[in-house]
Length: 316
Image 1: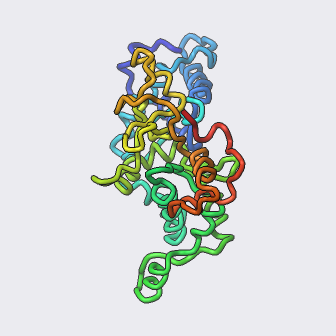
Image 2: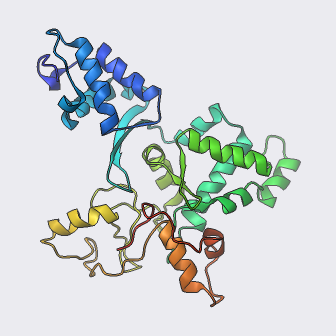
Image 3: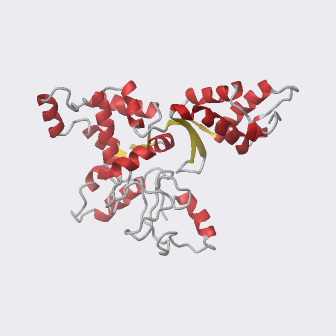
């Protein structure tokens, strides 16, 4: 890393502009992807001709670039944020729009009917497939395609009212839109064909998700008690709001003198119900043959008899 004075006193310059440009050309960067970018920028700016390598760049160096850049772009409602992957704790950085209505930025490239379809998919993730007993927080591809058809109330309203909400998409249009959401970095799809929000989408839409799906009586969007990011893992007590990512459990329990208890209600953390795809599989198996399932069970587990990708959804 170059030594151009106190790093904390850096001002926004061409180095930071180049760093920002790297985010404009891709949806996200991991720390390992950011290191060669910062190294190349520092090497170009070095006054003594030092050969700066990726290995020379630390997380603090990247954080310094981010802090200076964020100070410059904050008036434009932009911010470089970071989070840990829910799969493997890889640190991920993304340039996000921090305005509360960031979902509307889709309107610049997609039609109102396409955006309405995406919102129906989000409703399926965070309402239909996010119940008291089964927090799947994902939508299977077959279910997503069924959502191509707009609800009858919306179609009737659209036929009778000028400028009203949405019309249905064809199956082909819905497939293209789902692929577009993956290509644009909003959705990711697992090996078992479950669509979920990407880390970048969770960072960018966090405020919108909380505002849309949380209320005083039902907190559907919950955070990990350790890292405070949106959660995939629940407390064994179904009435408790405590949640922990699988990879955050060790950190949380170590902070409690290795007591493996929920950080919120202090219940022993044993047989915690899984959240995500594995929650869908478990729910399918537990209700198989009983005929008793919640309204979301059939939709969220359709065709999901095999265990999902091990990296998606964890068990306690």
